[in-house]
Length: 305
Image (cartoon, one colour):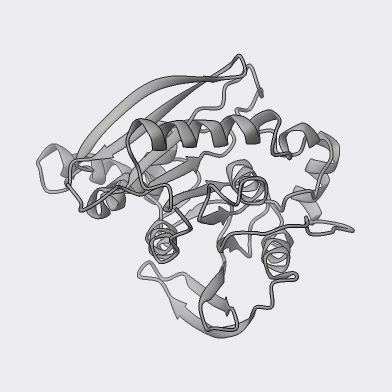
């Protein structure tokens, strides 16, 4: 039996006997409609009470995944329960994409007022209003196609999202159709110009052995985030995760020394959420904990209310 299968069985067994606690909170389901397009979602509401309004994190799954799978693989709900963070997981359907990918490669989904970007931003805003979340602490993160959509949302709605997390994703504007999207995933962006306008602080994770989304995409995401922002290198750390996976972390800060961009390269990492759980797909338990690092980065970057 493969080691990942053994780890998954052990995790489930520990939970059954009460030695491993699941995330504490409510796991609710709902449906939202924007401009006559419905979208289903799952929402994690932590049981822990916090002073003031709660932050909200929009989590965008990758292809073939769904909210339950993505929540299990990232373990984000368990961490969010500790910090009192609402976590929102929209569902992409096979009707919209046969592989349940967010359609990041289509121009209509790369614009503020149209397509999936408008739908997902409207959903996040609706959850802020409905659950009285903190409008200054709304964040978005995603894996693969979800990571590409997270970068798009940071570009199209910088007033809504205070910070962005992209794991194994593709930069905004790198593709204009399905075929160019496949080419970018395979080889990285070609001639590419960073979109104009403000970009919230961003944290990028990418495995340098990713054979599905080329690591050059992670490099370009960081280059786009740095373009025109007056940011400068603020440190580099090389380390080894608890699971034995080497990584390099580079940070970039503004003129006041405030960190705005982080780039994590997971050495030997493939197309998987670093530090994730084998209970979900596309997760690498050996890697550094991307969920914990993203949540740390997000909570250190409140936006403007």
